[in-house]
Image (cartoon, rainbow, N blue to C red; front, side):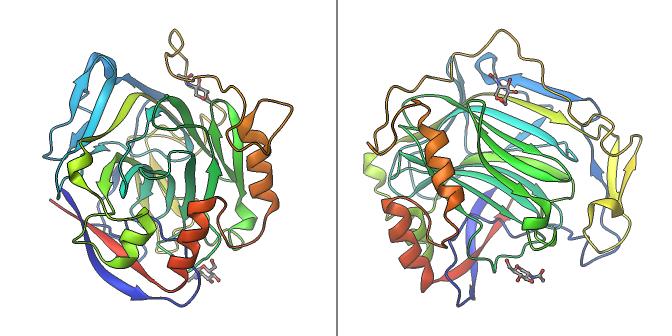
Length: 346
Ligand SMILES: *[C@@H]1O[C@H](CO)[C@@H](O)[C@H](O)[C@H]1NC(C)=O
Ligand SMILES: *[C@@H]1O[C@H](CO)[C@@H](O)[C@H](O)[C@H]1NC(C)=O
């Protein structure tokens, strides 16, 4: 499977481009006979990649992913590589935590994506050229016309230490959580009265790709932070472990109509939100979750919780411009550029 930039849609608003993988084999809001989605039948799934792959749960791209004592290593060393794993199951509300160290390299994008068949999407993204920030983003029904969804949160070095990145996704709100602290909240009503709120069963896609590949269009390269120089590689993202809670354990999910509304989803062999509020049991702690000592930005004082103040500042800012130096550059670039469509080809 390769990520390939396919087409461009001219849009006039200032759009922080994301990796919105706006492609679906069968989009149930456009077709009525899409196959149903395999559900995660249990309340939770956890896997520690330091003990190796879980091939019964994840399908991997053809690029080799190395399983080492550090975890699953997604490495890009040359053009065309996009090592990615994708879950065989879908969940319908719940939480997803990854213990992860993002990849270095200008233009290299590390990403954790929850994506539904009708292109609802909840994202974490890290740019290799910006090791002191993480992007949070979301999409509803493949709608890429908003200008204020992406938020860039300042962090300490995301590439040298593992952190626990969690998405808590309910039918009312979404929280992005880093090492146990909520850094962003999206309420249903705040996403265009729910219209843009992710609310259909999602599968998980985790991997790296080179947004800065010189074959990509200028908009993509600009969003990714510049052209990738493969001679500086290899560039590796490391996924130590994952834990997933499914609020609606079931055999499968299907869309009863083309609205893409969560109440229209049929839950086969289960009930929607029967496990709401469930937590993943943690097994013996983690080697990840490094502590932070002081702030690199120099603007945050007192608590030592570098993200709390930063995130509050981001939340308080209703401006379209993303935070951070690179974010400003990106905002300038994307203001005049185009949205792109990433097509996953087998
Ligand atoms: C897409 O999102 C924008 C704002 O983000 C909203 O104004 C528009 O109505 C949405 N389009 C659809 C078809 O929902
Ligand atoms: C990651 O953070 C979530 C949310 O705070 C927590 O429930 C989970 O136990 C953490 N995972 C690990 C392995 O520490």
